[in-house]
Image (cartoon, rainbow, N blue to C red; front, side, top):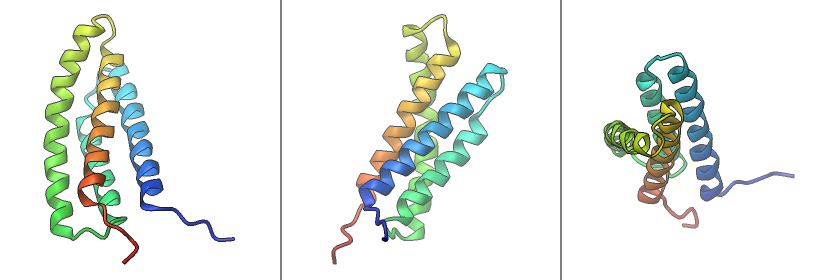
Length: 121
């Protein structure tokens, strides 16, 4: 019996999986006072590439979305962490973990919505 995933199911798996990877990376690095920025950028690029591949998006569009997503992720993550720190002033790591989760989910779903195509051609 062959199990077939739809684009939506693949997107769920990819986005939530990468959100978990972002969260774990942020929690681990920040617990030891290290900067996870380089790893988060790599994970974001990989997520974007995977999301665009399930939709057969051209490489130039994939590269453009990956670049924009890394810049947006940095900006939204930095700004979001500052806002979250106001809400959770005694938990720097938790505020950054929550921000990372939210930003990754937002970037992933926006990418999927932008590039999705119907496979019933």
